[in-house]
Image (cartoon, rainbow, N blue to C red; front, side, top):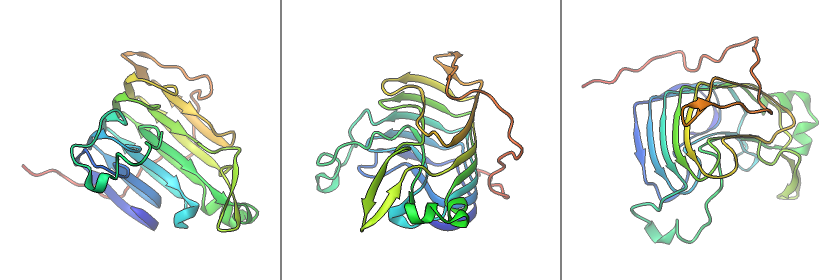
Length: 227
């Protein structure tokens, strides 16, 4: 969903594996979205789940997104079973976390309060997911924070606001590099509660439990799986 204010969407009960390019499930601009009970395995190149605002796509920000009860295995650890046109083999892996959360803004957008707010990431819930065997952090928040670069002669900043992000009750195992839950943004408001690593309590000093005024509810619809 490389989306321009897509909303009220549920992505549920899918089995995704082995693509030679791209992310597993991506929401780049949108609101009121739920990603629930999906199985994502062998995600060779990038994040299994990406939540982002990207300047290159000119998307909106994110608001009220729930990512819950997904099973994620083998993120950037294996090769895809099929590599059309040598696409995977000729490119470096992204280094995204298994669940990746980030946002960037043009500097002129940041200077406009309405745009800065509209392109922010707010009210995200990452809860009750199982993440096993990842070459990168289980959850990574705020990559490029503190950085500036140029795109098409416009200055870009990674200092977008990330607020109301709850990372709760996720079970991590075999996380190989970069930390289990990695916090990189100085402008983030993130809470971590009751996460585990190999069955043991996982405490992240940069992400302590806190209460948010508004809880994330996701999509205002439900889907049922038929047999």
